[in-house]
Each structure stands twice: as structure tokens, then as C-alpha cells.
Image 1 (cartoon, helix red, strand yellow):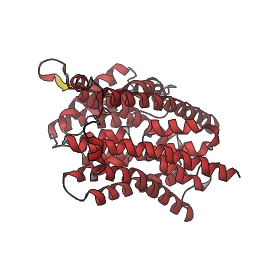
Image 2 (image 1 turned 90 degrees about the vertical axis):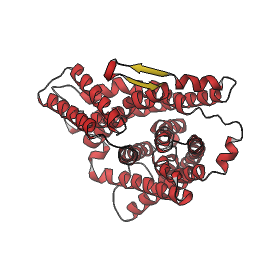
Image 3 (image 1 turned 180 degrees about the vertical axis):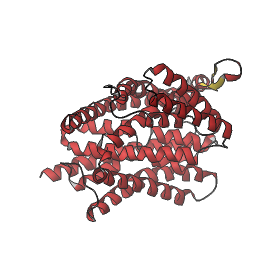
Length: 396
């Protein structure tokens, strides 16, 4: 395959990805609204009962019993993180991030957009149990952010979308590492070793040229089961399995592309909306908003996602450009980095996910989630306004 054909193929995949994410953003927004309405209606008790319903899957010693919310968070979200792993692998091998110079700028921007939000969060909350939420303002929700860009249409240069996706993907890599290292419970070495053996088996199957997906699915389920019992969050298994998927054609088959094509709609239109429905239903009655307004945790999340992302991504990118490190995508004026940085403050999916990992106290969970909602809405409005204003200025 020539470089031209490969570039066209990657570009076509990127366009399709952006289109699907835009539609997925709308579905995610509807699921979030439905969760909030349900949790604040006369049927609020039913909302909690549904997600606390316990379900057992398997038999005997190998059965797993969890409530529905945990089945979504620990089970179905593995598909979401598997797709994230696939996207990361493609970008690193055949996408924009394969070019070191092109990858350096979004990587530095994403690093600034992770470190500064975490620092600001800790400065605001100080110490204590509240400090465990430092990972909440790290992530960018690709579906929502790209959905907002889609609404802006051709008024924003195409390079902006490419830069935002690159930053968000590097952001995802860092967020996955944070989940694995900072929010891992006590490790069970036997189960962790078992998961590692499962991954070795998958690598061996690849080396032997086994093409049947059934074998990989069965071993993959075992890896998930072992990870679930090891203390490492089970969704990390999804990311690792995604990264192990070959990005280049195998016997003429684009395995990674086929998996993305089949699983991305499932992740975007089923798994993530279910996650929002299960986790975004916060009862805001009874003075909850007033408590959040006076909460250091809520303010830390808001400041981290807004000021942290804008100053972190925008500042690191601007500094890199000034020193000649890296290049922006073609057609993207440097001033638009501030609009992208603001839009990256839309945390939502992974931010909510980390919230539930960071806190066991229900009050802190609610306060952090209110902060995530508030920051995401403000980031969407502010980012859109900046991109439109700065794009108009660049045309003038």
C-alpha cells in the first residue's frame, strides 16, 4: 500500500470517526438529560432501585455478582476502553501521532492540560480525603467536544478538529495510566499474574497466525475476569487488549479497522449512553446545589477543567510554538489553540468514571459530579465562542 493510499485511508477513517462522535455526543447529551430528569422526578426512588439491582453472571466459583451500575462501569465500559485502546494504537502506528514532530505539539499540550488541572485541584482542596479526586479534571470527553465542533461547522478550520482529537487521544493515554496507577486497590498478585498469562496467550495466538476471533474473545474474557479480581480496575484490560491489536493489515485484513467499525457504534451509542444514564442521575433537590457551591471539591473540579485546561493546553502549546517545537495542523492559526484548550475542559465521561473510583463518600461524589457538569457546560459555551470569534478574526 502506497503512502498516498494509506494517507487517504486514514483521512477517510478520521472523517468517519468525527461524524460518528458528533452524533454520539447528541445521544450522550440526551442520556444525561434523561438521567437527571429521572433522578429528580417523583420516580427518583425507582432510579436508585434499578441501578442497585444485583445480577449474577456465571455459575459456582466463577460467577460474578454486581449491581447493574457496577456491571455497566466494570463490565460494559471495558468495550469503551477497548475502543479507546484501538484508537490510540491506530494513531500511534498509522495516524497523526506516528510523526514525532506532528505528535510532539499535541503531546506537550495534553501534558500541560493534565499537570496543571491536577495541581490546581490539589491547591483548592488541600489535603484530606478530598485530595483523592485530583484525577477528576484530567480527561477530555471526545464525543462531547467533537459534537460541539460539528455544530460550529465550516466556520472552524478542519485543522482544529485534528488538533483537538490529537490532544484528546494523548489525554486518554495519560488518563488510562492514572486510573491504572493511582486508583488501583490492593493488588492480588495471583490474579494479576493470571491476567498477564492471558495476555501472553493472546500474543502467542497472534504469532501462530490464529485468525478465529472466538479464541481471542474467550481469552479476553478471562483477562477481564482476572483483572476484576486483581485489584487493577477491570477496564484497563480493555485498553491493553486494544493496544495489542495489530494496526497494520494481517493477511490482507485490516483487523483494527474492522473492530473499530463494528465496536465504535456499540461503544458510542449504547455503552457510553448507558454509563451516563447510570452515573449522571444526581438528585439536585434538597439544597444539593447550594452545598456544591460551597464545596471545595466542586470548585476544584471547575477550576481544574476550565482554568487548568485553558492555561495548561494553551500555555504549553503556545510555548512550544514560540520555541519552534512541533507544528500545528495545516490551516489552523495559532490563536485558535485557546479555543481548543477551552473546549478540552469538557470532561464528562472519564471524569465521572474517575469520580466514582476516587470517592466512596456519597456527598463528595455528588459535589464532584456537579463540578464536572458545570465545568463541561461552561467549557462548551466558552470554547465555541472563542473558536468562532478567533476564526472570524483570522479570516478578517
